[in-house]
Length: 183
Image (cartoon, rainbow, N blue to C red; front, side):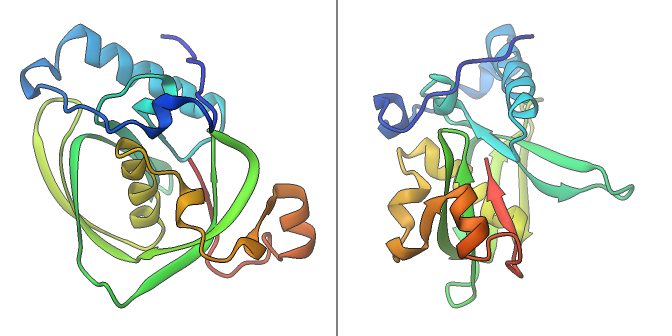
């Protein structure tokens, strides 16, 4: 396993439309190695998610967290060729998002609070599940990366976009009722 270099905003790989992964190749060495390396990279940088283009791989693969198992430990999902359907357009969840590809900055983004996800997992099995709240936000953030979209593209009020230290001091980032997200 290896810790991979994270692409930062401005690198063209972050603005590409990623190509699907052939489902027949999911259990192969190349995809499995990428999944392991992405997990190690995400953990090293204290992320709650990571998308393949962030590690210079323009393929439709993401890891998304924000959930916990029955023992309270973090739970992560591997999403290969994910498809998202918004289940409730009216209910939005807003929070200060961050991104490993945009270090040191946070911005207020509002996203649908309830989604359905269809994707392959790391074993090549097709899955379908519903996410609410923070896990839904994390998953949308990661899947945006697969379409060349960064959270900064979704900020509607630039007065709520700041360096982390300033956001914590002046924008009540630490006291925000809905939490924060950093992939």
